[in-house]
Structures are given as structure tokens and as C-alpha cells.
Length: 142
Length: 142
DNA sequence: GTCTAATTTATAATGGTTCTAAACTAATGT
DNA sequence: ACATTAGTTTAGAACCATTATAAATTAGAC
Image (cartoon, rainbow over all chains, first blue to last red):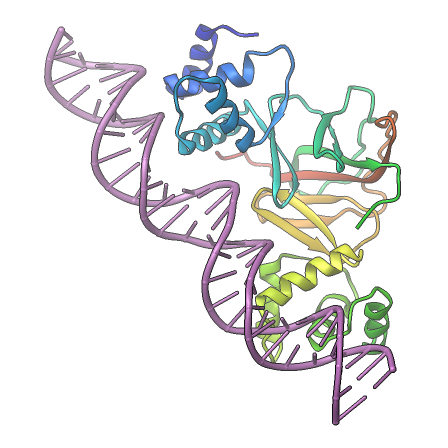
């Protein structure tokens, strides 16, 4: 839960002007008890349903990408045509339910720490992401 | 290294007719010492350079997807606009070099076995994929 | 060879994302 | 308060990777 003035500070300190549109999107994304996953499409739908004012699709794309760049969102790519944004920016992993297309955060202790024994010479590790794909126990259909 | 007759069998046993186009693509993809990663674009370029005959882009898409569906290829999605296919269909993980856009297989012992302590009730695990993003040690540029 | 269903093909259509350039607005200085 | 400037928003066009279409071709079976 964050207040409007906190969003203004947050945006300003990261070099983004706190515009009306960005603040509305902040409220929708960050003024919550729990973090969540969304697609651009989800967000656009949410905005047009919940808000009295319209925000241009271009602005939605711009804002989400700006927030990602500033580290307020993480992108989780499932496959070439399904990409989610995550308001949980801590290091964590995911289950992906292939039946329901649901992306589910792993709790602290559901996945043990991934041990990287040898990294590529001269490179530093930016992230380690585990994606566990699950589906109904019944025989997989093709 | 596989022979043409082996590809014919492989295709036939999986219910795919061994057409001239599919066999050519099999040769390019599977007639190698080492497995590798490619994008559809890479493959299309490869075909137009190395082959005397033209294969329609639609056929390339169809074939790659058919091969994936039959389990002869795995798809590795890096982000919303970068997706690779992998001729290594064994369980393994990847490094992704964000400087060079190179996808690199992890050797057997570079990443320890990922421990899944709690799975989602009633679901079976289809795959566990780890992607380690690396980049030059020098300060990350935005 | 004949038949049928699968496959290939060129091309059109699709649709999500990015680009454009004009209008608007936040921030700063006067 | 006003003027200026650079950043932002906007609608709509453009882009482009992928998929759909429907006609031509081909593999497999008889």
C-alpha cells in the first residue's frame, strides 16, 4: 500500500515526471496488498474498466517499459507469444500452469537455491530464473 | 550424425510424411556433431544460402512447429522478442549472454539439480528450466 | 496408374508492438 | 503569474513476425 505522494517521489527520483497517467498506473499496479502478474492486455483492459479516463495504448506501453527499465517491474516470458509483467521485483521463481495459463510465484522454500558452479569467464550473473511448467496429471493432450 | 534413411524413419514413425523439404531441414538441423540453437530467421537464411532449392517461409514455420510438437526441438524463450529453438532436447539449462545475445548450454555440472520441494496440488511437472542471464562485468549500461 | 489426404506454396491477413509528429503538460526561470 | 523548454501523451499509421488461405503439388495406398 502506497500513497500518491510516495508515487510522485518514486517517479521523480528515478527521473520520470509524475504525470496523471503514470500515477494512475502506479495506483493500479502498486497500491495493493499483494504483488501480481499481468500482461499489457490485462492492464489496458483494467484501465478502461476501472478508470473514468482513457489512457492511450501507446502510453501504457511506454509506461510499462519505463517502469521495467527503472526496476519497478520484472518481465517473465513464458513463450514467444505470452509475456507477463510481475510487480514482485524480488528474486523469486515461478510455476506456470499450462492448463490455465496461470503464472504462480514460488514461495521462499518451494525451490531450493540454484547452485551455479561455473559461470562464463569475465561475465557477471544478472539473474537466475527458474520456470517450472506444470499441467494436469491426466495424460497430456497434443 | 544421421543418414537420410534414418530421417525418413523418424518422420514416418511420428506420423509426418518425409517430404523433400522436411528432409532438407532435418539435414540442416540434425546432421551435425553438436546440437545448436537457432531462430526461425537463422534457419530461413541458412536454407536460402546453403540449399539450391527454395523452401517457402510458411513451410519453414510449419516444419519447425511440427518438429517441436513431436519433441525433436525445444523452444527457449529469452524475452518477448527473442525465441530460440534448440536441437538439444535433453534436460539442460542455459546461460544467456546479454552482450552478444548468445544462448549457451550449461554442461552437466554447471548448475546443480533444482530441488522442487512443493509442487502445485494435482499437477505434474512438465519441465524445469533455468535461465542464467549474464553480461559484461563492466557497469551495466541502460 | 489412380485416388485421397497431407503438404507445400505464394500471397493475403492478422495483430501486437513501435513509430510519428502534433498537441499537451510539468518543471524551471523570470 | 507568465513564458519557455523539454518531456510526455495521443491517435493513428507503420511495421513486421507469424498465421491463415486456398490452389497446386506430392506421398502413400490400392
